[in-house]
Image (cartoon, rainbow, N blue to C red; front, side, top):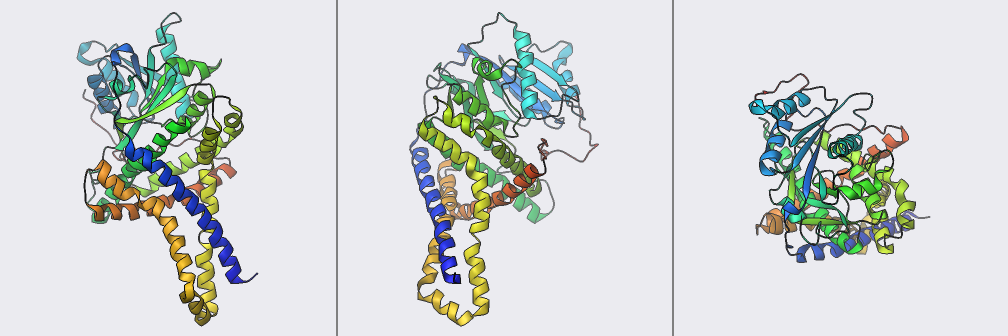
Length: 458
């Protein structure tokens, strides 16, 4: 087989994948841009319980508890201390005993090894069982909603009334609702004297904000049509009776995947519950400044997606998931594997071009200038456009800015950002092959080196 034929085959295959993805992006962009705010409901019709899983979170947990208790005064806050090696539990106890009394809406769920530090899902299951014990067997459960918030999470003040809307928890068939996610530090550079470090850290946080508020929000909006809206690890609202329906005899609605949020959504959907998504409210969290920590986090997410492939048969066989919905979920679960395939296929045309040009530069130059360059231009454009488009959308819709040039710059940066997922997919598959399935906490931006102390005055 000649080099030109091989080049044409690989280009055609890669171009087909790129075109298919571009069509997919167009399909999800339109509903996202056309969506209008929905009605709100009465949060007083429900009882709200915030679950905050913590593992060495002394730096952020105090402010988070204060925010939740002052913003949502009638909501209960359940802090799960996953055998922290710092003073997380001590901070919670001090806040519980403030002013010489105690806070009846603040609860600490302590865990110890060997049961502890086995994953976020296990920590949430511990909170679920603690809530059941606290409520008692005769308590009403139909109006109880559990909210999962990360230790640095800040749900917007309007989130309860938004989630209580008639089309969300006002609908008895809705088992869970996911909020939009934003980065709280998207305009705050990291505290470093290194100018490049400040610029790079800020851009990385902004790109995470762009990803969640545009691409992921658009995907979630389009899933409203396929009935496959998935849950996130932060800002996840779930009806207690929905958790009961999938908890099983062991009382474990969350399972063992590293992507426990998506896994929860799979079990809810296949059990017959519907799920919702709303960008009318949001939860704010820290975007990561460090590329190394970002890669660790996304490797964990990619590995969790690979682990959830075990639910393919469950999804396909479920009478509660439509054929279109099953196809959408399977496409999502195939993403890390497609990234592995793409990382092998996409570079081939360029590698062959370089190698062949080195062997016979005059001949290859003639072939390239006689029309082959058009193929490469199309190839590159279709590979870039699906990511480039989100920059201007983010600039116009989220930042309310008409600076199109800045938006295009963010689009090009986002394309480079997305290509890091090819790296994390390979890291994830290597972890799977080596049997490394443990959960590792991603360090906060505000965390110091081991042994650092924080003030504990409450």
